Amino acid sequence: MDVQRHEPQLPELKDLADHIGDFIQYWGFKRVHGRIWIHLFLSKVPLDAFDLRQRLGISKALVSLSVRDLIHYSVIRECGKSDRGTILYEANPVMKEAISNVLRSREKKMLASIQSTHQQIASLSEDQIAGLNISRERLDSLGEVIQGAHHALECLLACQELDGEVWKNFLGLSNSRT
Image 1 (cartoon, rainbow, N blue to C red):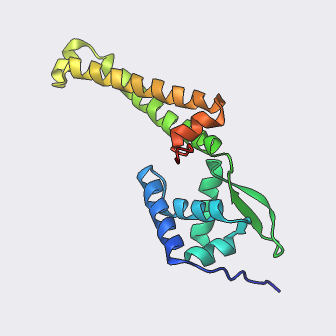
Image 2: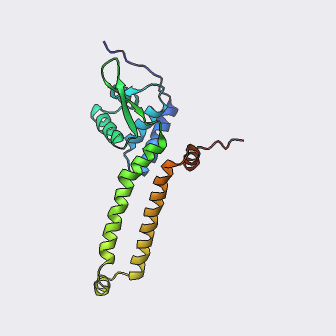
Image 3: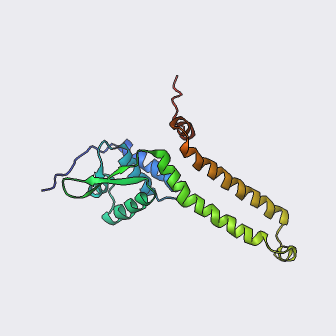
């Protein structure tokens, strides 16, 4: 017989999950991804899909799809089986790895597509550019911005090799309490 975990649900925890969900949604994920992640991140123990459904009041299908997405980006991971025989999940404890995986698999691909499309337009003849009523100077300026974004992303990804203090400063987690 399955024993349900009855954990107190503070309104503040729901609010935090909703705010994290809004923030994650701003960055191109679904709101539910952030809500699931924060519950897994804050939990002392791994949670299964049933626990997540209970905590968030969402459907089994939504939990399943969302968990699959989060695992794909290495934001969460499977970590064994519960007493009920269900898969347990936990947040990836290495935040810089999770952030790097997202940047590498999403933003880097997106920037590569932007760069490729820009290069196709930039390679048009001056007559073609003029015929499209496009400013060559602005097109070139856009190319510089795209190249700068690509370089910045590469630098950020290279930071994963740096020590934890650099990442803590980047994430705003440094101990600046005085």
